[in-house]
Length: 79
Image 1 (tube, rainbow, N blue to C red):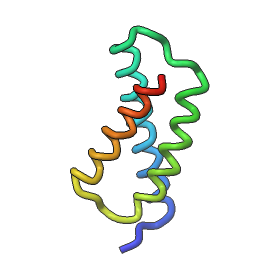
Image 2 (cartoon, helix red, strand yellow):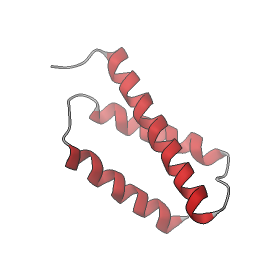
Image 3 (cartoon, helix red, strand yellow):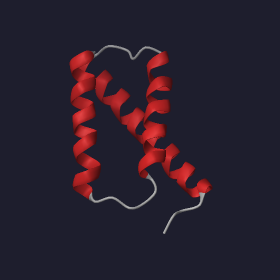
C-alpha cells in the first residue's frame, strides 16, 4: 500500500534528521573536530531525498542497516 505524500515526507524528514544528528555526533565524538556548518544541511538534503525514495514500503533491518553502515564508511574515508 502506497502511503500518502504527507506521511512519506514525514518519514523521510525524520529519517534524515536522525541520520544527520547521529552522524554529526559520531563525527565529533570520534574525531574531536567540529562539523562544518554546510555539511549537516547538505547531508539532510541528501538523506531526505534518499528517505523519500525508500519510504514507499517497509524495509527489513538488514536492508536498512547495510547501506547506513556503508555510507558512514564512505563518509569517514572522505572526511
